[in-house]
Image (cartoon, rainbow, N blue to C red; front, side):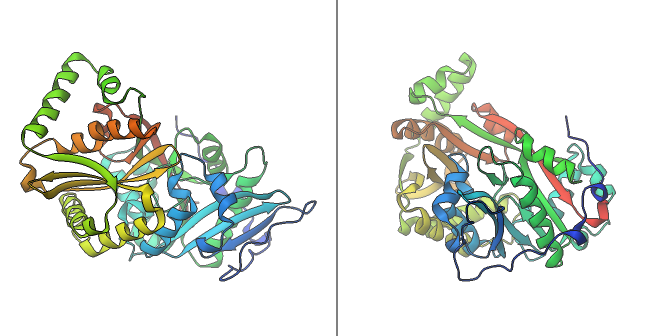
Length: 396
């Protein structure tokens, strides 16, 4: 059930709140002194965050909120990033990663205007009603806007130390003031997990309107590897999976995983651009993919894994896996659709092979993120709904 909305005018008194501290360009965060009230700060660059304490808040399932990935997002998204922090005598009590989305942002699935439009067109719960309460020109109504919870899709959230009361209220209030002071037209969390009830309740209580935006998927990795994985399916599905694996093997395709090799990046970039073009992202370029892959390698080193499919020595499919603690995150992929000749490379590369490799490495979960929900659930993934939450004067 969707959490009901609350009138933002009953909960917000922006003019009565003190201004935020100025964003810090070159100085690291100063930790509060014991006995003083928790202190808010705004940091422009992830390099200046208290990285160890931030990463402790992020936890094992938040690879894209870890500081090394914030570096990647900051350098490749083309967005101005702001990191709101709350510190007390014990150190970092809470944090919120934000990005400014404008009409030049190419990440359409992470912009409030395009997410509202797409979800309304898809008939997702609450999206049509919200879109009907906004002007026809969604970009003009919502952009530039402050996108909160990270520059990634799925499980966007704020970070909070367990048991610290009031952290969420303070961070959200700071984000809203930041948006007001910078003249931004909206504040949004675009992919809040249905199980993130504390944040959902807090956002609803502050007057944010919500709608179903996506579904998020992940796969628990069985310790017994592929054999145990396959045993969890019906006999019919097991036969189909076996046939798919034989088809790939009989075609002579070689599947392997290894740390990302810089020499493979140009080919990966071509394949990803082909995949994105198939889904209508025709403005995407190989150079943009290559820049992200190179930056991911620089940030993650051996934790950037590449699963590859080769036919006669040529790479015809790939998946980039980000390793974070004992979790694997399937981050990017691409395929040569002409060369694969209808072979089920997607399932072999992203599921069957990854389950084998992850089990050998001791990984416990593979995160598959949003999109292609039917394919993911058909191969054993679990799922949860994601909800967008939006605050803008047009919805008051």
